[in-house]
Length: 286
Ligand SMILES: C[S@@+](CC[C@H](N)C(=O)[O-])C[C@H]1O[C@@H](n2cnc3c(N)ncnc32)[C@H](O)[C@@H]1O
Image (cartoon, rainbow, N blue to C red; front, side, top):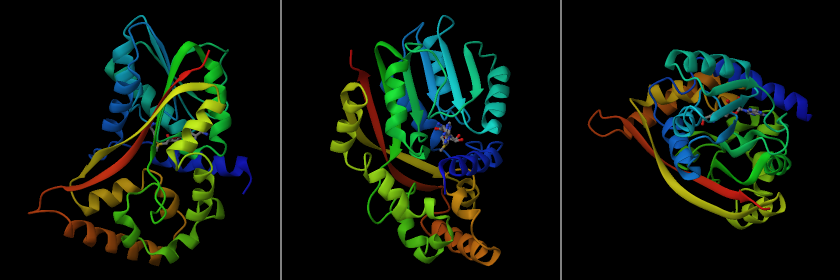
């Protein structure tokens, strides 16, 4: 699959997911975005760029921090995400946010336009993330900061999901994915710079950053039930699997996930899945 077909597929999948994305009552992206913004701590008056902004998990907390004299620009390749987040900003009366459809790998802004760049669970979708990171270093003014999150990949994990799903999603189903999405290909891409913190530090330093900090933390995913989790999984990276399964496989996987996830709940309480998230922050080297 060439790069532009790959990007069109990603954009189309997130476009279809946009209306429900992060709005199904499952807690995960919003707390992670808040935490990332806390880590880069934008100051009043600063200019923030959020790449792959989705429904604003970083945009809104960043807008609150920079205040009326600052700005937050959110970009996303999926027009539906920008449309929904624009509506949300208007609904909340947030005046310091600008949202644009744009490829986050090639942000079209003059050098030195921002003080902070964030990207939560988005740079993992870029075919050549290190090239994008080098562009972000140039977009940052002075000793600007970058912060992004990624899943913590382990060899036996279905990409994007915590290890508990390794058992729940039969390996043979993953053969339905287009080659670019198969775990071994994703892993090849991620292992080249992302899976090992030492590679991450080296990559970021090579892209024009210093003081790289890479820390894994647990984000507690909370969903009302197995069914709620399955609905939610259609709005994130796993949608790329759902969309490539035939009807029978889709139904069988849905049933298996719902019953196994419900079995993990205690006394009919919510489903909770502790998920390791990698927080990476760095400062532009000048
Ligand atoms: C898992 S979502 C994360 C969204 C948001 N940052 C959050 O934390 O909820 C990934 C987002 O990255 C966007 N994305 C993927 N590839 C992109 C690209 N090349 N340029 C800009 N956005 C991209 C998707 O459209 C989607 O909104």
